[in-house]
Every structure is written in structure tokens, then in C-alpha cells.
Length: 333
Ligand code: TYM
Image (cartoon, rainbow, N blue to C red; front, side, top):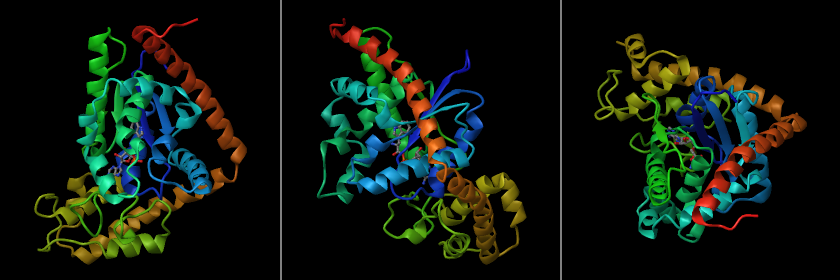
């Protein structure tokens, strides 16, 4: 841990296949941020079970996500990488924070409403309580900054509300975190429905590019991407959501600015443009996938990372939880 640096927290759920939206909106940025912050990056398996999971698959996806974090450049020597369920303080703080959160607030959460619509046969309490557990994740580590995609903004806001509420009732206890949203890529959209977020659980998998997709699949999906009327390749999210989305993806995957990308494709057709985006993504994914596979073959190493991560995370988490228990009047021995 680096003294004097701010604390940064983020997490991804080990569910379904990760999309390039998750990579662009979250993991890729972590790699750049890890040198400037004390970072905690979790695998949010407790959030994952709010939707029914196959146990064997959940176990596999947990290691697979850890391997992906590391393959993408998240360095376990620099950051605390851990599995949420390995640190029991998340569930404990979550219970306390439940008593500072109103049912009406949770019922208004957009993601909750969406998930209810999609999982009508399993609207469980966990689904509703999801943002409180997320608040517990963030507040346990006294996080200053939380880099996430725009879809998590409402959850960040409620985390801030809960922290402020607790601090006002007792005395300053939690750092009130700020969300960090990237200028380009905070919301990558579906390739077939460019007005909708690219999602791990989209009904049509052709609209989402998965981190595990092979080269041909990636290129095919981009070739079929929905573009807009007209023929100009310009960044205009309101009138040209499809093209703008592809420009964002291209920019992130090539390291070029959106303006540079626009000039590169000036006068070219949609066909060439879509092929170029597909190739840029496929070129980047192949080495990540190879590294992930290599890491997955070394389970001992991955387990060591998790053990060390849980130890380091627990230390901070316990400190915050004790503070909270003291403030609310839990008798301590
Ligand atoms: P999850 O697993 O749904 O998504 C992980 C991260 O990916 C971002 N993201 C996107 N960014 C840009 N474009 C997209 N299409 C896109 N889709 C997803 C998400 O915003 C997120 O940053 N609740 C969280 C996990 C979590 C968490 C936390 C995050 C649990 N505890 C504490 C931050 C802090 C989630 O479901 O992410």
C-alpha cells in the first residue's frame, strides 16, 4: 500500500461472459489507475447470486475472471485482488447499512426494475438489496474513487446518500466516494441496438462482443453492426448512435482519439470502417485470451493471489466494521 494515495475500489460480477463493454468501462481503466491509487478490485460473487447461478459455472467463472483481470494488466503486486465472499465483513456491513436505507429508495433503482422485468419468477430480496451490498463494498475500504460505467451511476449515488446519512447521524465514519466515469467508453452500446447498453445477458448474443469471442466471431459481429442512415463516419451520439459507438470502441482499442479515428475514416465507407473496428478489437483480444488461458492453467498461483488478497482486504474491512459497530452501540469485548 502506498502512503498518501487515495483509495480506489471497483468490482465486476463473475456472471455470464464478460463483454468488451465491461473491459472498456471498467477493467481497462483500472490498469491505468493502479499506479496512482491504493486499489481494491473485487470479484463480486455475492452480487452474482441475486440471479440464480449454476454452482460449478460460478466457481469456474470466478477463477476465469481473476485470470482475466491479471491478463488485462491488473497487477496483484500493486492492487488487492480478492473474492467478495472471502471477506465476511461485506455481508456484515451490508446488514447494518440496510437499516439506513429506505425500501422506497431501492424500489426506484432502475437496474432493480429492469432485473425484475427480466427475472419475474425470482424477484428475491437480494435483487432489491443489491445496491446496499455494493455500498458496503465501497464504504468498507473508505474508498475515495470508484471507476465504473455509467450504468452504475445510480448505485454510486445511493452509496453516497447512505454514507452521508450515517455520518450525519453519528459522526464522520465513512469516506463519501466519487464515481469516476471515463469520457470515452463509459457506456458501450449493443451492436444491433445502439440505443441500448451492451450487456453480458443480452437476448441476442450477436449484439455483444464477448472477451472470449474468437477472431472470426468478433469480425463477423462488427460487420453486422447496425449503422445509421447517411454515409459519414462522424461522432454524433444523438443522430448517429451506431457509428458513434463503433468510433468509441475503435478509439479505446487502438489508443487513438475519436477525432483521429474520424479523420482516418473520412471518405471511407461503412463496410471498411466496420471491418477495421472488428480487426482492431480481435487483434487486442487474442493476446489477452492467450494470457488468460495460461494463468488459468496455474490454479495454485491464482489461489495464492486470492488468499493474499483476502488477507489484505480483511484487515481494512475489519477496521471499518469495528468502527461502525462501536458507533451504533454494539457491545464489544
Ligand atoms: P457488472 O459486472 O455488471 O459490470 C462491471 C463493470 O462494467 C461496466 N459496464 C459497462 N461499461 C461500459 N459500457 C457497457 N456496456 C458496460 N456494461 C458494464 C459496469 O458499469 C461496471 O463498472 N454492481 C457492479 C459490480 C460491483 C461493484 C461494486 C462495482 C459490485 N460491487 C462496488 C463498483 C463498486 C456490476 O454489476 O458490475
